Image: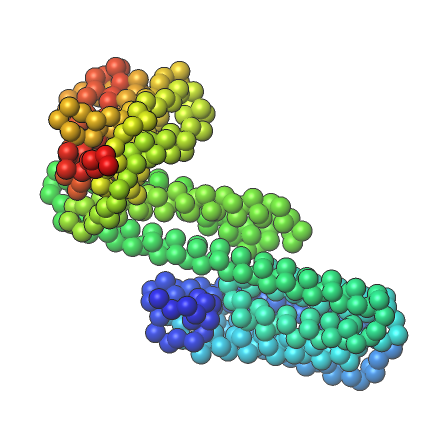
Length: 464
């Protein structure tokens, strides 16, 4: 895998993998949307700077600079107006991104020229006006151009560096303090820009994963029999809800942050929204991973990575992770694991995945004031057993058969009030089967359910 940062690969490579090519497309589209804002903001800031220094600088020089800046901004607006109704391109060349970077650099150099020419060496107040102006330019660039960090740095770098160099060469303690503060501010801007680009790339990857998943679902639907098609219709309905909920959160909150809908000062709200995006992305990734894992199991392509695994540690970890959800649902969560359990040869990550699915189902389908118990032990025949027992709604024999089939959900009034896409038990069954084990399930309506993972004796590591 290349060690070159993603934002540089989109500038340097002509042919890119799907994700990076999509990043390049979204960079161009996002920047095009921001063009009117950039042009108007640049011109407005230019007029502000000219009005502040009109009385002490050459009027001819100011008019020439404003004229050039207006022409530059007007040209950008013209190009945007001509292409505003064009559809988003399927692919974007590296040359297009480089041109946007060059345009940003030209704008930055024009600002740097204005700062150098207008910098008042004998007036600290006006020096602060220039310092705050270029600081605002940098903040605005980071807020509106996180998808193109190289172009953003090309725009804000020249004026910021110019004013800091001018302050540093002024001499005097105050100038040095402002130089240090400005330098720290640049580091903050760079960190914010890196975080913004990371969030942007995450949103793009989420969209691609969603498209990939949609393609997979369509292939499954076309290949299925009449009976399976009916099951997949139910699955697609559930999946639509499960995908749209986190995707709506990702898209909605990212648009609020991108457009600064609450104003540039609402940093705390934007951080909260970014955290919501992160949570939604994790939920979406979990759903996608489960679907892809069950597909790999069906295709015989899911590989195990065995190592000596502590069953007790897995159980304790699972109980700890589910403790908050159980508490919020009013469920008592207990663990019954002997301290002297032997180790087993197994894929630790997959066993954790299986246990978390069982725990999640047990808590989800138990009513308030119910109980969920997790236990483990060595059977007389040498098998290792791990069980999850709940006092929930339970299932009939026919419902157990349905629950063990991929993409099926047991049709009862309570289960329909919970989220899910109906692959939890079938995924656990597949993982256990790959280990050479079996899944034992006992249940009765309104009496609760006990699901036991049984690993064969050859998986148990003898005590040394």
